[in-house]
Amino acid sequence: MEKSTSCMVLTGKGRGAVAVVGVRGSKATHCISKCFKAASNVPFEVGQVRFGHWRSGEVSDFATESVVVTPIADHEYEIHCHGGSAAVSRILDDLQDLGAMIITSPSDYFGRPLLIEEATRVLTGCTTTNTAAIALSQMRGAMLDWASESINMCVSGEKSHQAIRSQAAKILESEPIGQAITYPFRVVLCGAPNVGKSSLLNSIVGYDRSITFDEAGTTRDVLHAETVIDGWPVKITDTAGIRDDAGTIEKAGIEKALTTIADAQMVIHVSDSLSDDHFLKEHSKLRERVLDGVTLKKLLNKSDQIRHDSTVELKEYDFVTSAIDGEGITDLMKGIVSPIASVMPKLGSPIPITERQVLLLQQIADSTTSSGISEGLKRLLNGERET
Image 1 (cartoon, helix red, strand yellow):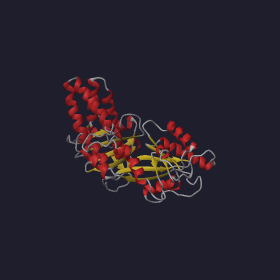
Image 2 (cartoon, one colour; image 1 turned 180 degrees about the horizontal axis):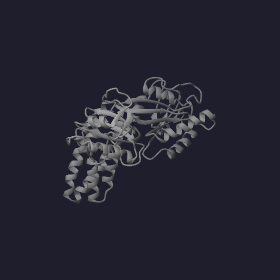
Image 3 (tube, one colour; image 1 turned 135 degrees about the vertical axis):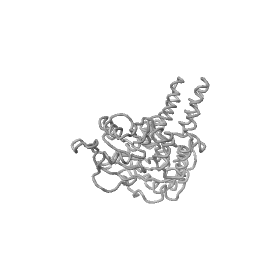
Image 4 (cartoon, one colour; image 1 turned 90 degrees about the horizontal axis):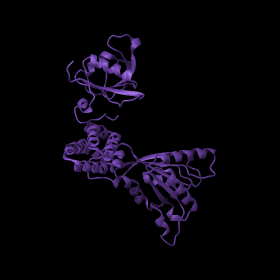
């Protein structure tokens, strides 16, 4: 077989439940046909998932391995198999016996730099114009250009090394942007029962996703709604009202609420009255519960029902809203996406869009030696492909 056909393990090393082996090239289909016996005889189509068995050449059925094969494009396939090293090695050996070259560098396998390949994959999952524009700028080489130029700077001396570390730290500040491309920004509304959390959610998303009723304990589960605010995908969660005298079923909902809070990127604590001592105590408890880096905000709802002689007390809250007449909802929506929008660099700047990129940038920023910086940059450019 000609050398243009190659194969590579696309998943990271370890004992994962599933491993993925890629094979691509002019004779990739020939390799698959020799070793893979599908459960049905339906012709392959790109994007189709086919279950079957892998066997080595003419070996009888008792030696087969259960696998899933997916055609990615013309003459390109992914083989999903057991994650153990024995199963992976067997498939690679079989492909090599058929003439395919085993590749270890993603840039060699895909025929283009790893950072461009990652950006291309991320771009296909974008759901808004904002996120697509960011992924496209990375696909056009924003991160690749920085990493390539930085490697050249490594030969310039200690001053350049310090500059690279500083640049890596600066790029890491835009990590929330990269996360927002792949996953919606996670916002949780929490607070005592009947303070209007469900009405707020409905006002933000523009339709009745939550049930609203003037009785404590109406929301007994965790309700999610995904929307787009100023071009950013956002997932907003309406949680069960947290109170001490809840019944058995309601307590289960409260436990789910607390679990959801722990996974949030922004927590909005809702009250419906000024100078609420119970609210202030609960807010202190929330500060202990939320993780470092999570934004915690105070919101005063039902402003249409609250009389006040001074604006001093209102300054204690980040947002003041009325889900009934719409007061403050626009400011609330802008505030929800502010942690993303506030770190948005100029379009065309390098932005980390995968966990792999974030980890390596952190390694570069923390490195105290030139060799550590160089190694981090090399892995950023040519390291193992993230799946």
